[in-house]
Amino acid sequence: MDRYRRAAVDALGLRHGSTVLDLGCGTGLNFPLLQERVGPTGRIIGLDLTEEMLEGARKRTERLGWSNVELVRSEFAEYDIPEGVDGVLTTFALTLSPAFDQVIADVARVLPERGRLVILDLKRPDGWPEPLVRFAAWLNRPFAVTLDLGERRPWESVATHLAHVDFREYYAGAIYLSVGEPRPRS
Ligand SMILES: C[S@@+](CC[C@H](N)C(=O)[O-])C[C@H]1O[C@@H](n2cnc3c(N)ncnc32)[C@H](O)[C@@H]1O
Image (tube, rainbow, N blue to C red; front, side, top):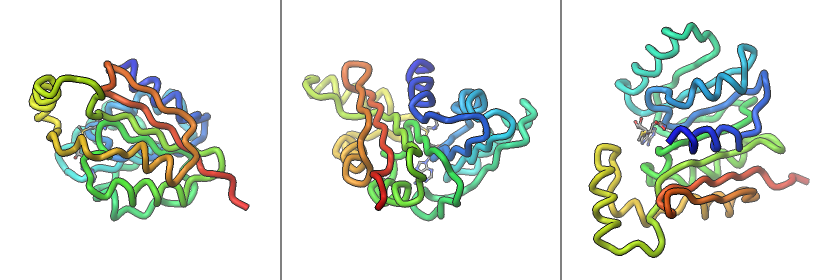
């Protein structure tokens, strides 16, 4: 999974000093890779719905002595993305929200030109036999994965609200990476 996380963080195109928002950051598994990119002069905003997850992210942040991480407890759809965010990452999280399309539209409105939204998530793989799809969903149930989430297609929202600059599939189509950036504003 680290390989995919690294590909996702690479796709953000961050630089030292950038500000990045990690939507559904969980315990902050993406933070070490993000820190490599933004450096001590950059900033990471980690947002999550649950205090338990944020507590894990807080412990990681304190243990590693990072002073450039801000943790926010919020629903994705209720968060007003602040000015100055250069990139938005979400890994194995955004599809869990029925409001994913609105969230992607909000991200598209606030991202600067050449800012990136990167989504790494599970998807219903094309061409797998139904029993295998059901088994894969069952295996992933600790991560709140259910079969009906297969109907959600956030990469289509990326193509609607942003210019879709990359789409890749991994794991025989069970994982995807979708990258968008704002269309030129006139
Ligand atoms: C499977 S975990 C992934 C965590 C982390 N991004 C990772 O890659 O390890 C999904 C996370 O999304 C958060 N989440 C789910 N629905 C959410 C929502 N509507 N608003 C904010 N966070 C949400 C959960 O609390 C959880 O921490």
